[in-house]
Length: 136
Image 1 (tube, rainbow, N blue to C red):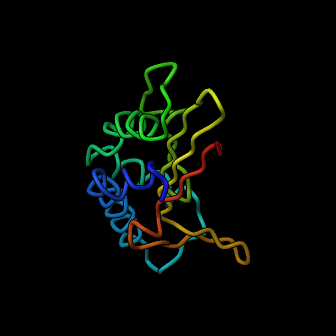
Image 2 (cartoon, helix red, strand yellow; image 1 turned 30 degrees about the vertical axis):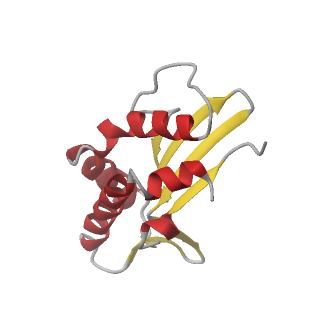
Image 3 (cartoon, one colour; image 1 turned 135 degrees about the horizontal axis):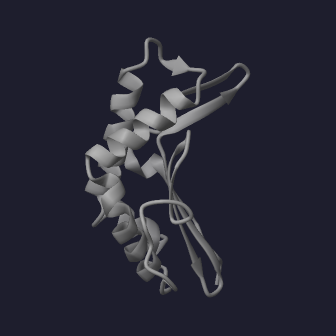
């Protein structure tokens, strides 16, 4: 297993679940199971993440992920780009390590291309957490 993923699904599982709870609240506000307007996803998702303290905790979670990856941050992360990004697919944490980029995604929404639309995606944390990092 990946130590970053293990950390997120272990010690930080409640944080990941809060991200997904925020996505549920956003999707529950839609009139149908999908919406075509990206702003119906990103704006309320960011607001829910902020209201529940998920965004405020994100820099600490990113720092912990970097430590789990065996790295060290060059600068103190903040809850905004480039470190923390709210997208139409979910929440992204990014850090530059000595050997490349660490990207952690909590994928909460799926993007359909034909027709273009957004719907609630992965449900359990195990399906939502994606870690991309340099291979040793």
